[in-house]
Length: 429
Image 1 (cartoon, rainbow, N blue to C red):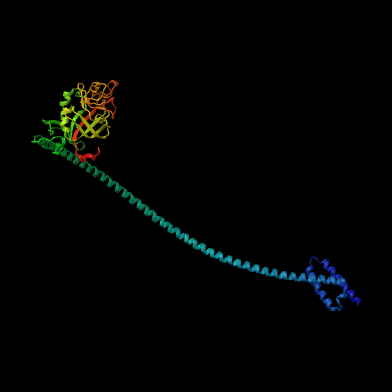
Image 2 (cartoon, rainbow, N blue to C red):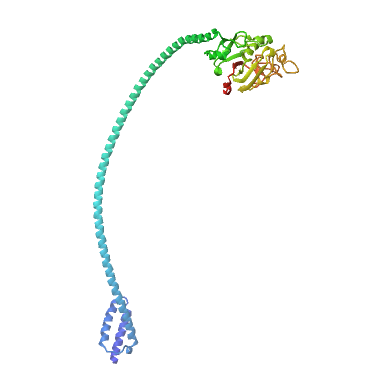
């Protein structure tokens, strides 16, 4: 028994030394020693392990541990071998896949090259066709341009020729028309004058210019009329065109050629020439306006050629027995109302004072004859001067206060009367 223990101790010591001295190749040595020890232990009947020395137990534990390590090492080797095998398989599959892909890429590259070559040929062919089309279009466009230019030139020439012919025809027509017009004018004038002369030669003369118009005359000139209560015919100037015509002039001033510095006798009978400046006369004005309602139209022009008018719906002049009392009303127009102030006044001269001025005679103060009140707002029989006048001529000139004031002598003044038709009350002026 002692020999066994001694031998076993020797073995353990040997194993101990080996375990600690062969660390570099510990794995292989451990496997070998483990196998030897395992055999040796089973050859000896050493009884219970509790009887074994402590060194033996330590060695056993070390061997068990080493055996576990050996087992794990083998498992790792197996795992490594499996991994290595799997990796090689993966690498082989990848290499095969790479070869397949490369082959497909080569085929695709080849097909792409063929496609590009075909497309390039088609593109070149299309380019040639487009160039040919553009060349054809350019040629056609040039031809059309030349054709249009040629047509335009031809049309211009034809247009000029037609215009020359048209101008010639128009000139010829105008000449013929002018000749015909010149030939017709005497005939028209003769017809008009014949018609108007027939008015003058009728057994009953027209009473006023309105009746002259109503009998068919349209020429504004002088006519012979006979107001209903006039003792004899009166030669008057008629305006048959203005504002529906039918007006009889009672005053006409436009150049200052006729003096208006007269007394009552001249103002009663009238003075001047119907072809120039004139005053128709208070008696004649009475016969025209004293027996029926009349309209009064006053036209004024300044030296700037500004024209205005004053229209009155009612105007009447009484007889000599009433001292030619004048009534007027119903103003409208553009000149302003500078005549109604003298409404219901008598006609006064420097020798006959009928005014309402208590301090003297308006006619003498203003050296004129007119319908005076206190004294006047207009004086169409005043002195004929030009434009603005000095203060000593204030109120003595031919003026209309509401048009340029009483220090401005007007260029033209006209007074016309016409029998009033009640239906014309609403006609605007």
